[in-house]
Image (tube, rainbow, N blue to C red):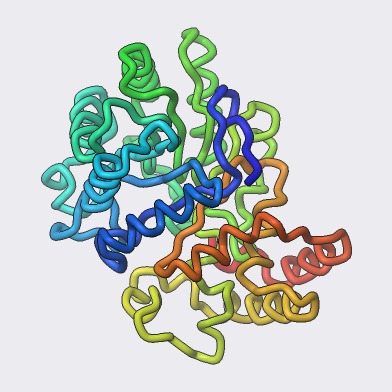
Length: 346
């Protein structure tokens, strides 16, 4: 398994990261334990979770994923072998998150982090991420920006100072952004530099053959500022495996269980693009999932590719994508399809 520094930090993470958002909803604790055991054996040392998980969010399962991971740490005694990432949720309509008053500020960061540490049964988190901004902007499939001046105060400096203090206390090792824009990313970098404070080391945004919006603005920032991408949804909620083509919805799959929550992945242009990507993969005798993941793995601005699975078989296939390489001719063919169907799942 390939490893590289987490952005400009000295933390070494595997090129494949184990995503956890199904644990506690689609996966039991026993299955989650099996996935963590398997991933670690295969050289994956980077696990990503969140206060919010599992997904879709609901009051009954809220924070269950962190609890499962904490139980695994307690039982397996493998905390020192894992680079652990988690996230604090921003404002949302979900009333079960901090009584519907979630906001990323000093008070809530400190409180939520302590709660996560308790669930995770650890005294530190390696990478603490801001799951999405306080301000209204473009993320989670809403591409059209509408300016709201009254929402612009995102208390950036307060957040950076709070995270810096937590680094000094040893509760976190570093921090990152998520679902952030080029403007927001540069604001954090600018204020960190001006105030001689730690800068974010990573940005966790969606990136796949169906969503390459990161390339417009953020990719250059990522390379020039060494704030590398942690790519989530690299298989477009499983659509890029091809299993949903022909209006199929395999029983127990994410779109079978939760399709209404992620409809952007099944719109017509997304399925047309997926059909062509699947055909390209088959012509090259590569499994569609590994074809799609290999494309993400090969991006120069990528730090780690966050994969998720509900079965060990899926997990093994996804991890093995690290051994697949796409040649120049294949990449050119991918760009041809991308030109026809540009970012159908923003």
